[in-house]
Image 1: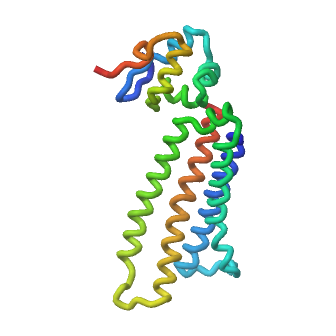
Image 2 (image 1 turned 30 degrees about the horizontal axis):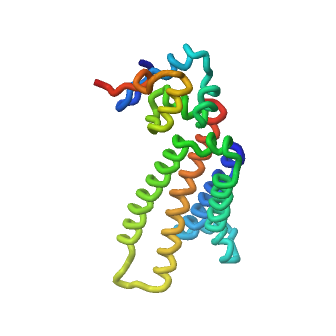
Image 3 (image 1 turned 180 degrees about the vertical axis):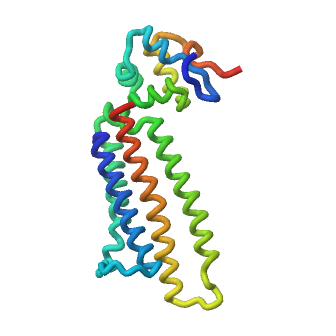
Length: 146
Length: 71
């Protein structure tokens, strides 16, 4: 693993999540972009990417070269990851609470439930997608420049 | 004391330079990334006890020579 490979992995995860969040938001807000993801299985892509990427990073942490890992996964980087995760969970918590609060519970239907799932997915993807993208760029820039 | 964190004053940059080491040299010896050393020097980050001891060992001085609590 190198800084560039890690940047690439985290950046792709983030940007794909932002893309799916944008796509879901457009559908939810009723904008017709004349382009649709026809197969619902594609909606698993962000989750699968996160799962695979976490696996690759975890494997590189435990199985990779120790000297390289001391640099790649040092305590300063770990603390920044914790901060990103904490910010993501906090924003998601508030967002999901708001999304729950604005639902029309008086006339609840499967359509409403389906929409809420999309709203939550779009919000979570957007939150973590933006955080991961910003983090990956900042992390790589710092490695290159200081 | 250089650029400091609000909870910890540090003298790392001065001591590192007087030891004739670059940030890269120190980071390799302390087994962390160069940006960690940079972040400590600039008061952005407070290191763990283990890392502080590794840095002190490399610079052949006491931890108290590098880091001090603000009064």
